[in-house]
Image 1 (tube, one colour):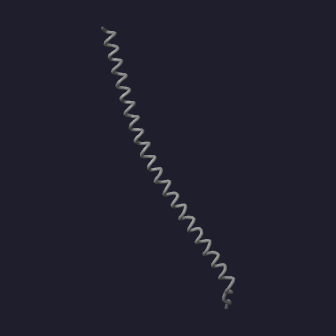
Image 2 (cartoon, one colour):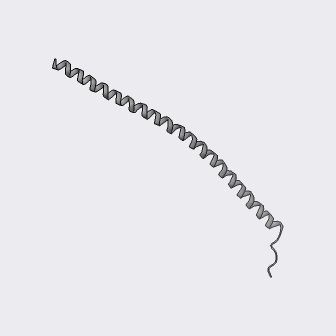
Image 3 (cartoon, helix red, strand yellow):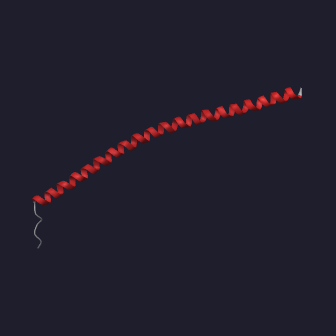
Length: 80
């Protein structure tokens, strides 16, 4: 009988370990899904910020070319 009791005990231990592993797996799956969603949000924000930086860079470039064109059209005032 000790052998049968030992087998039942081993079975219960293994079943408990499997339950623990399944629980961890579900938790990790949930965390991975949350991180994936957060990553998608961050990637969208980065893309938007890149577009905004490009717009600012273009405006600065245009403003710089406008001011250099203005200098060529109008000579600086004479110094006193």
